[in-house]
Amino acid sequence: MTNEKILILDFGSQYTQLIARRVREQNIYCEIHPYNKIPQDLSNLKGVILSGSPYSVRDNDAPIPNLDSFLGKLPILAVCYGAQYLAQANGGEVLPSKIREYGRANLSFVESANTLLNGVNAGSQVWMSHGDTISKLPDSFEIITSTEDVKVAGYQSIRRNIFALQFHPEVYHSLDGKLILENFLVGICKCSQDWTPVSFVQKTIDELKAKIGNDKVVLGLSGGVDSTVAGVLLNKAIGDNLYCIFVDNGLLRKNEFEEVLDQYKGMGLNVKGVNSKHRFYDALKGISDPEAKRKAIGSIFIDVFDDEANSISDVSWLAQGTIYPDVIESVSATGGPSATIKSHHNVGGLPDYMKLKIVEPLRSLFKDEVRRIGKSLGIDPSLLGRHPFPGPGLAIRILGDITEEKVKVLQDVDHIFISSLKSSNLYDSVWQAGAIYLPVQSVGVMGDERTYENAVALRAVESTDGMTADWVHLPYDFLAKVSNEIINKVKGVNRVVYDISSKPPATIEWE
View 1 (cartoon, rainbow, N blue to C red):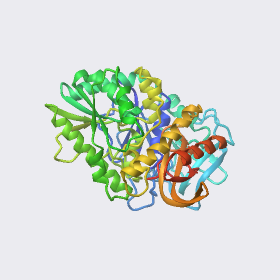
View 2: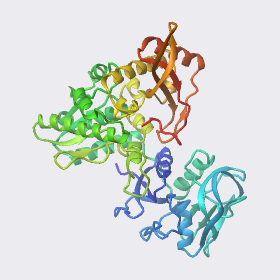
View 3: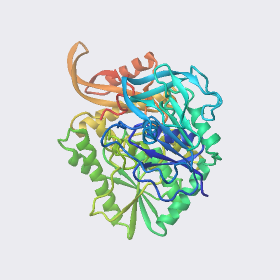
View 4: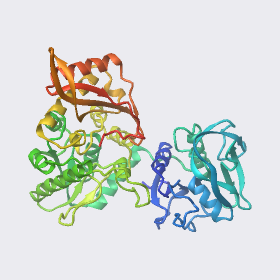
């Protein structure tokens, strides 16, 4: 099946992936490509979206795309930097704003007859994030919406099939943003909205069959949603040529190794459990820097998979459950100029000595999309509802160096927290939860005696895709009960705190 698609050109904005999410929410397939690496195959292309950027169009090294392939031929929606670029490139003028325009604003004027803004009224809240402003539009371009402070909040050129917005319709704070994008995608681009989980599954299976052929594949399973869905997709594509490996890296949750292996029984997957915990402990000994931890863990993972692959004759591929947020935070997903937040152990390729090629069937999907795909594949809902768990495991929830003793303490703390969420019917209302081992000791009193022991932090967030998150307002009584149980049952912990920071500015994990 061939889907219609929207091309998103990435100028480096951290919001680019949110544009993709909003497009896909309309059941429309889209691809993100760097502004300077436009794909040659433009078949089935219905429209183009230009993203924002950390650059100013006035910078000497500002990104300059070549839009000749579709300018005037396909509808273009330009957002923020994209809007400023098209204005300037066509003879308009962009100048520094007198004040940085950032945050909520309200539309004071809306061209009610405009197709892009159909159903949007004056007063609608939008989200601004820019330091420049469009001071003059090119000839034949016309304003379609304004705010009190930004005269050119949106414009169009019917002759050139250009629509542009100075604000970000993709973010939650632009209350009519979803409607505006739908107007562009369906009303202007005439997309048929045929991209569904079922269509993705069939398309991906067909692509995997064509890509892998009769080759053998080793898949690193984690017990989580991503690797499980990747495993089921691969199994449907190549059957017995898939070899699944689940590694005990010594950094899993309490009893997780045994429970995960049991979980996969009856799913038709060929799974082998490998106990390599001491290889990881040895590699992590004395390392406190979080990036160094991630790289050490990634290196050992590769070594373990290489060893296991060598035990199977003629293996050609290493499969991973990498998803889009992993890629976005590690490197630009497209090779474009977006900033790196943190590296992920499963992103970045393989060393030269390893002969395996990488296949990542979920690399372009967000977490909620993966769950939709899993549901369409008939995967157990309890498995699909499992909270995300970082690839490096508890290593990045232990601040400072890693020891087996610290891992045991954190496993016990985490087990109490997660079990309590489940028994209190709170687990499914939380997107991700876990405990953090802090490099902090504090004074306490137990049994009339002074203690000087460790503090742990509990973290529970709500999110849809992991790109943004807010802390969950867990009941005080629940937190009090959990705190009391941890302190009473876990030796070495005498203080429990609750993390109430959002992402951004914090991340979900502490490292």
